[in-house]
Length: 357
Image: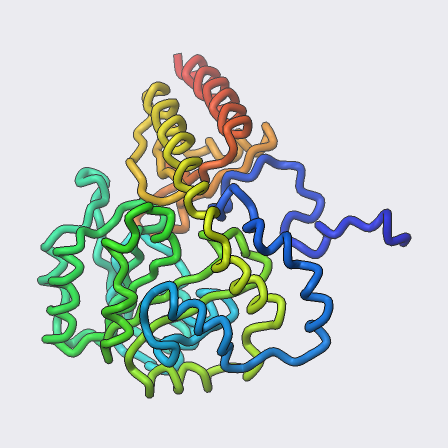
């Protein structure tokens, strides 16, 4: 095959895809301009093995979050660090605050961990309350909390976060907080636990460039903890060259961009509000979100299939603990795509309502 005829999408999950994809909740602005502008320099360094300690990237992260570089461990995406953490600790009993990212449960089951679920209620807007403190007991080894939560988009109040940290310290329980969507919130510094994690032995924060900077294909994540032994153990739970040269390059370039997140907040404030209002106008139950996505519920469990017929993909939430096929999650996309989605959704709902008459 000639080079000019080759479709490079074939090496991605979007090979031969012709859908409007609302199922993947990466930043709709695409990769930062600083990465586009510097990409040609990557050619000069990809023939070398990567720095196994990610010194340059860790220094850039440390500067941003005002922590020490030795409290940072970089990995091949957030999932890589999640699995390394679980393999390093090998917990016997874990608590997951649900519904949330399914990979926590998958990783824990690989080490035969007994997983308990703290169920959030849609009647309470999926909001985490102080009731969770009673579920944090000394017989637990680890707790997973996603903040803001995926797929609900809820953020945990700073006061409650502080109380959870205190209870975990009292009961000697590891607390893992996933902040992969946190920087979609303009005042994320109010909520982040990164500084606390850097000074703590039983608090770990996991984050990634995947969602915030739309760098899914580079596979780049990092975690923060003051527990040196834990980080060293995590590092040993996998290959030495876990973070490629292109991934480290992309991360450093992304952190150099001074306008990307500002543009993200301006985009999200308009499009997320518009999507929410349009869904609400269709008499759909939809929940407010602090992320770059929205969770909604309809009376029809076959909605995803109908949307696929119209070349639109949404996230089927039936795989999330406590949710069913009547729940959907959609990413906030550019306005033209959002408008198309609402148009198609309105048509499907009108047709289904007519069929029920």
